Length: 230
Length: 243
Image (tube, rainbow over all chains, first blue to last red; front, side, top):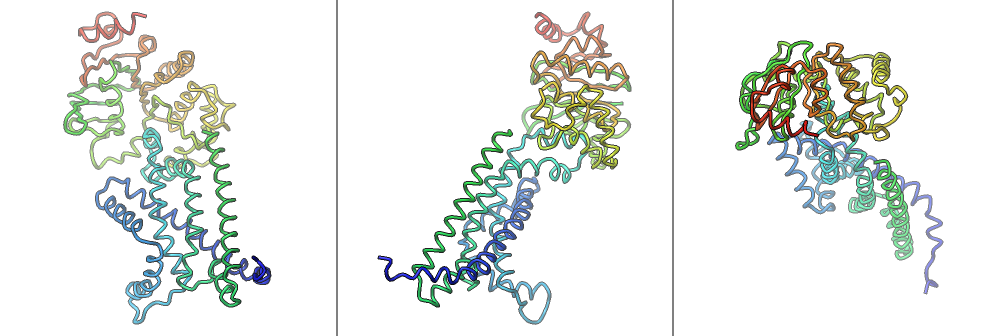
């Protein structure tokens, strides 16, 4: 049945697919994870702060982001960010924002909602005696968080955070709606140019599957190691 | 050194955890607080360094009012050591790092000074060979001695102990009590919540007995063990000394 297929198209486009496409995908995944983790941790701290306005803000933010489809947010942001930039800088015309910046910002603000819930669970998993002991030594609230609570929360939640990162890695393929040549976008371009849709999409699926599978396996091993230390 | 006057504390609106508690701990004095569980003794000692807020009354620590909103609480807490029932060492830090963290971040000591001080105190509690281990690698008794050393590293003017031996296996209690007895004999001001009446009779100056949030008895050690005035204290003593 493969008689009519030309799998050589994959070999011919390998360097474009990986050097351009996969590099973009991995860069976006990496930067978005770091950004979303930082922003998400701030949201989690707000939500646990006990200050009503902060709790409200973080709560509404998280619920809002988690009830919107990601594609919608990507689209919406791409068209809106130039105007927000214009408004913020007070310039006379919409700010020029590249597709990469726009998608990075989108993934950070969207994924932060998910990372914040993970970090919140992580912070709540630390016994109350830990911050009490830190405060009894004279550490301020922010020092207590920075040196005592967050490192432990992060460590306890590392497997879950990494699993979420794998989801994020797959989600980055949605930037195809902005015609950005990420891995899937690059595969799609080659597929349409050479009329080899089945071959290219099959190959893309195999690559996503292989990377996600290997990463999940790594996370499981890490989980076992962390469980052992405790 | 520690002046507690007319302190009331409610949890929520219903349960009153402390009722009009008044007592004091003078410089160099060792005061043991005992009483049945739920009597408010842990709550009282946590009010002293404002880990627990209270609604009325006042606590003055070395001339500084604890429940004054203007008081710099981290600065005040750094001057009083506290030891917890469940040790509360920081599990992600090595033993020596547990001792250095607050010295560096709160007192602003250099890493070298903090390390030297930490090593000296570990030696003092008999654990200098364990500096590079993590807390989970130590026994309960060893962890509690590290916790005492961690508090002492801040050069505290007084030490608060919240049931320091209640979570320990019996064979580890004495190694912790020995450290505490040494401290008391060196003249450290101490407020100790404990059921260890042997420790109380050895080094305490005064014993406070609490029940249902009230200070029922506050007497010099010899009076307390000789002839407690209240029925409740007598009953409590007969129960814990009968074995």
